[in-house]
Structures are given as structure tokens and as C-alpha cells.
Picture 1 (cartoon, one colour):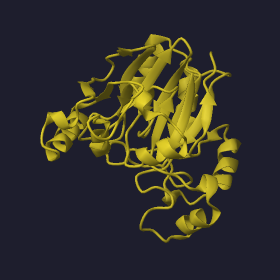
Picture 2 (cartoon, helix red, strand yellow):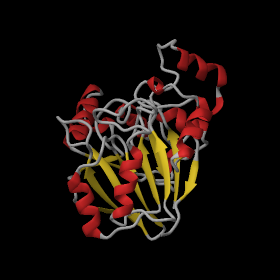
Picture 3 (tube, rainbow, N blue to C red):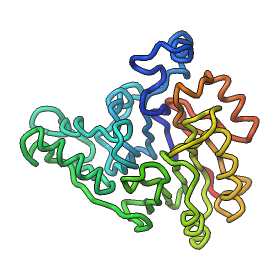
Length: 281
């Protein structure tokens, strides 16, 4: 199983659209891996995590066949994770011909479903989105799609919404995808321990980078704590790949500096376009 990071920034992107701070100006100057778009990941070629406004750019930049995507799991309704208007372009009457997969299903919580319904209403009626199915999902209720078993877990992020992080399992490997969230709830550790699941790759929210963690995100000061707890309950072991992702320009560091700081605590640092093969553990 492969995971490809399509976008690795927080809501504002990096450089941020309207920002001329020192760190955004550095990113513009350096280019390459210092340019970070909004958060999105692709597993193999058929499972998408989140659908931000940068989705079109991700498909073109990475030369991807997005018509092959069968499943889109949304973490929560924030704009940088779910901007569904471009789903209208799956309409085969005008915009999409010879698609690899005729139907995509969008999975998410009730707020995600409501946001999609409101977007559809802007275009007139349900027929505007003829090749999309939807399924509302609940915490701890595993969804079986194709070769994947995907379990939504409560994220410590948006207190007026049931945001999710995801446990993604298949016979090709397992992933724990922790975006967006602060420190995990005890109940999540309890669930993972009872499941006796081991994962080959863990992707950690690191929005605060070198700043002190707070609220519904983590940083370099808090991801080691989560890693330690996951190792203590057997979710992670010596084969597990640990990657930090989802960075805000307020975190200050260039990609090179962020890699150096991440390496000191035993983590890899994600960048747009990074692809990782998930080890079996």
C-alpha cells in the first residue's frame, strides 16, 4: 500500500495567499518543497483523503487519474479539508468523458454531508452531481470498501463537530492518519489497544511546528508523546514509519529546517508529492 501526500499545509497554505511574513516570503523564494498546498492524501490510486480547494492542482501537478478514485473519506468540514464544489465536474454531460471509475462515494460526518447538500443546492438540484454517492459515517463504525477497512476515530479538533481521524487497514498494510487533531482522546488509545492493531505508517498532525501546541492541533513538542503512547499499547513498533504533516506558516521553519528538527525526534517530514510505501508490521 502506498500513501502519497498531495498537500501538506494547514488552511492558509504555505506561502499563505495574502501573507508577506518572513516565513511565507522565504517559501516563495525557495520554492520546491517549501511550497505547501492544502491537506490531502491519496492511498494507492483509488482512495482519497479530503477534498480541498487545491484538489485540481494536485491532480495536474502529480499527473494523477482522479477519475480512478472510488472512495473519498473526509476528515471534517473545514474549508481546507472539504471544498466540494469541484465535485460537480464529474458531470459526464459536459466535463468528464471516458472516466476510469463511473462512481465516487464521499464518506464523512453529518456536517460534511450537510455542506455537500448545500453546495449541490447552489447548482440547482441533485442532478448536478450525478456520479457521486454519499454515506454518513460514525465514530468506531468500520466501513468496508474494496480492499480497505476504514474506521473513523474521534479527533480532538472541532468541538462543535464530530471530526475524524482514520485507521485504514488492508492486506497491504495499515495506516493511522491523524489529521486534524490535538492530543488523542484516551478512548481512542483504549479502542486501538482492544483491537490489538499494529500499523506500518502513522501520519501526525504538526500544525504548530516549533510553537507550543494548543487547541485542536499538535506540533513537534507533542507528537513524541502520542508516538510513545501508541508504542506502549503495541500500535507502533520498530518497523512503523512516523511522519509529521500539516504545517502552518506560523510554525516558522523552512522545509530543510523542519526536516532537521523532525529527524532529531525520530520523525520524517512530509512534503507535497512525497510518496511512502507502507511497511507490513
